[in-house]
Length: 293
Image 1 (cartoon, rainbow, N blue to C red):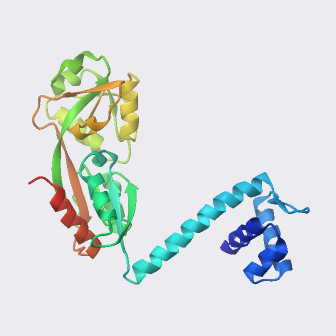
Image 2 (cartoon, rainbow, N blue to C red; image 1 turned 90 degrees about the vertical axis):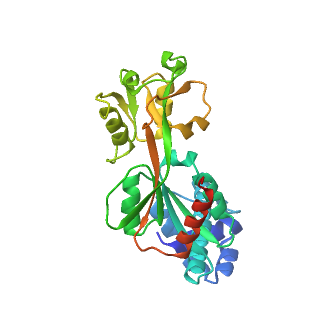
Image 3 (cartoon, rainbow, N blue to C red; image 1 turned 135 degrees about the horizontal axis):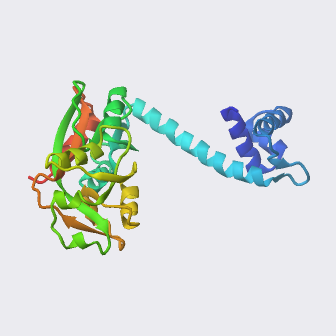
């Protein structure tokens, strides 16, 4: 299947007339008919009812709707690629761990999308810190927001803030009367995230408990913060989350503070060594303005 098949079908689906579609496409009718037949052969279904008048089949209506959206997205990608290549627009790829969305990141994204003073095309990718480092080195993103310190000579990491950790527990749990200690919490079954890839925030949590001479029993591994929160609400276990996650309001879970002062998790900015592109510099300037003095 080639792009011309999609474009030809889009015009034909709009006109429902082979002669008119061929005129709009500036081709003869027989080649258009052959291209549509090739498309149907490849898909293995009929897209058109070839009667009078010409009609789209159910499969044809579905294919028209989704191929139209695909072509519109492709046109946007091509336009932005051209504008970036001509220097009219700047591309900035951002990787982020889900839990960092409860800090300065949402406001940063709003400011970057304002188009002042630099018009940016943002690419947002959810990924762990380890995946961010790999994506930075491959050039797929320009900046990352994660929670794990990774030693790599090609990457500069900066701690933006240290988030206090709190315990997330099922509604009605007796420990919600807190504050509580890590030793108390270690007696509870744990929902831990992310399971992969490692090292990750999960290793940070395990190391925190081990620094107090206790270990935790992991009742359930999951890869997403939201999934972990949902499983806590279902009574599977408890978990540790950054305090900023308390912005979530759910009836089936509660949060309680920890007694230990070092029970924190950093938000870490990662970027390539020597990267001084305008988009990145603009992003760093906004971050500096947003962070508390």
